[in-house]
Image (cartoon, rainbow, N blue to C red; front, side, top):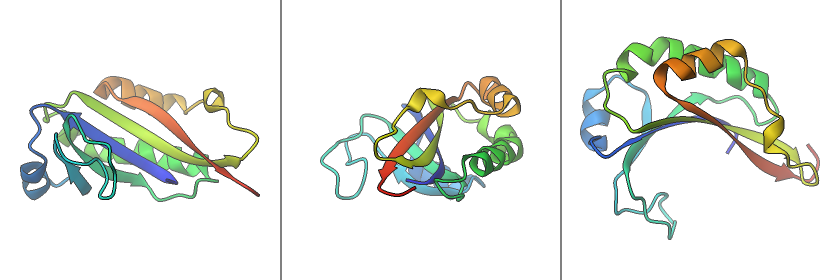
Length: 132
């Protein structure tokens, strides 16, 4: 999935209530015991929500980083009020099918600092394409 998706999960999160009462830009909710995705056989073990921090293309990682910084800066005061177990920023990147190397990405220092302050982790999901 291109763009940056923010996953917020936790045993104490009520995703339905959070979506209804929070100003956060939540686009998907999931609850423990339900499929993680609509047509998935994988059953979730935690409650959570997803938010889109960046719609930038999988070819535009720098733009995704900038958008994610802005997202965290704008929403950090709201996020710290939620009792979450994990907060993950997942950056979707298109790569040549023969060049998959997740360890090569270095997010900007300011983004890393914002994540550290929130206890958030950064992941990079690579999507192989024939002609990037």
